[in-house]
Amino acid sequence: MPRVVVDVVPKPEILDPQGQAIVRALPRMGLRGVRDVRQGKHFELDVDDEVDAQTLHRIAGELLANPVIENWTVRRL
Amino acid sequence: MPRVVVDVVPKPEILDPQGQAIVRALPRMGLRGVRDVRQGKHFELDVDDEVDAQTLHRIAGELLANPVIENWTVRRL
Image (cartoon, rainbow over all chains, first blue to last red; front, side, top):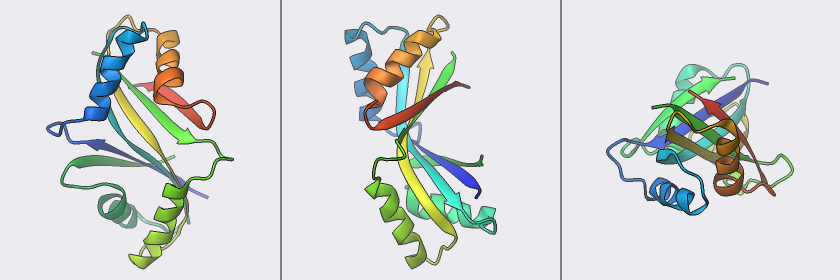
């Protein structure tokens, strides 16, 4: 069964407090060299063969992501 | 500056109520053919050139993922 991955990330102009919290936590753990972190969502979908690109675009843009504040990518594995 | 992507997903034996909620919502939106969804986290890190694979492994396994219930992958873009 085909597997599809949808990754959703906050748009560049949108603040990402979760990512910023991670950036600040790393030096306290002795881990240096990370300049920026953006946190998003990762979805793995098992789909029937006949699910087409337009359907995947609707799933990503209408359910998995909020197009006002998030960008997304769809890729078939 | 190198970019690294860390994807974190619940282990197969761990229930994923968020993913299951998405599976149930899709037919109500007229979107058919999706058999399973797993929801995880997606991180994009901007790192210095000298950040090595061992450091990235620690960042993923000690801060971004919970190794008891989640698997993760690290890839450099």
